[in-house]
Image (cartoon, rainbow, N blue to C red; front, side, top):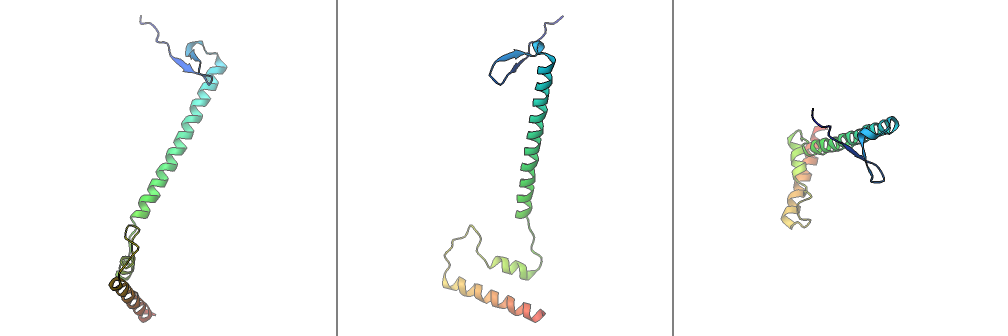
Amino acid sequence: MKDKEVVYWKMRNGELISVDEMDINHLRNTLKLIIKNKNRLKTALNEKLEKERHIKAANNFVLHGDMAQEFHESYLSDEDDDRIDENQMHSRVCTIRRMYTQISELA
């Protein structure tokens, strides 16, 4: 017969205790601690996954229609430089005027 492997539990004070030597109350409290920690980890993981899903959904938005796409493209992204030259400004003003004209024609 094989010798029993000794398994230790590290208590809060850092002392190691053999699981075989624990009394029933200590084992019960240890099990409760393990379950609480598992639930905390599960909750934290679910929150992290939900944040990642939300970020992914926000990055994958879809613009419907040419006007919406054109309007979106007419603005600088966060990665673009804040400085724009006169030609770019004129082009954007023209784009916005054209869009307002199209909107007013629909009304």
